[in-house]
Length: 112
Image: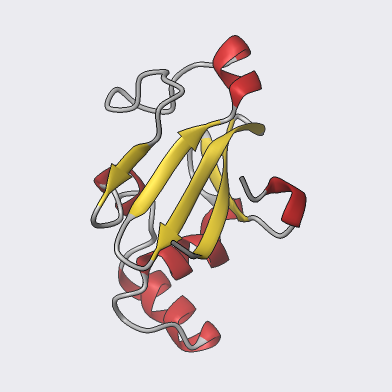
C-alpha cells in the first residue's frame, strides 16, 4: 500500500511520531525514542509500538485544524480542497496553539 502523505508529529518540539495517509486509511505510530522519554500525545493514544489505524483522519488530529475564516483563508491561499483537512494540517501545523505541532515529512529517511 502506497503512502500518499506523511507528517511528523511533535509534542513540545520533540518528535513524538508519524501520521501517514494512505489511500483508504490513516496510521499514527509513535517514534521509538519518544516512548522512552515523552508523554502520550493524548488520552486516546497511550504508548504502544503498535500503529493506530483508522479509516478517516482521527478526531484528535481533526480537532487541531483551524476553523472559520482562518480555514477558509488557508484553503484559498494554498488551493486546498474543502475536504482535505490533512492538507490543512500540513500547511498550518507548525503554528498551532498548544503542545502539538505537525510538519510535513520531507526526508526519505524518515519514511518508515
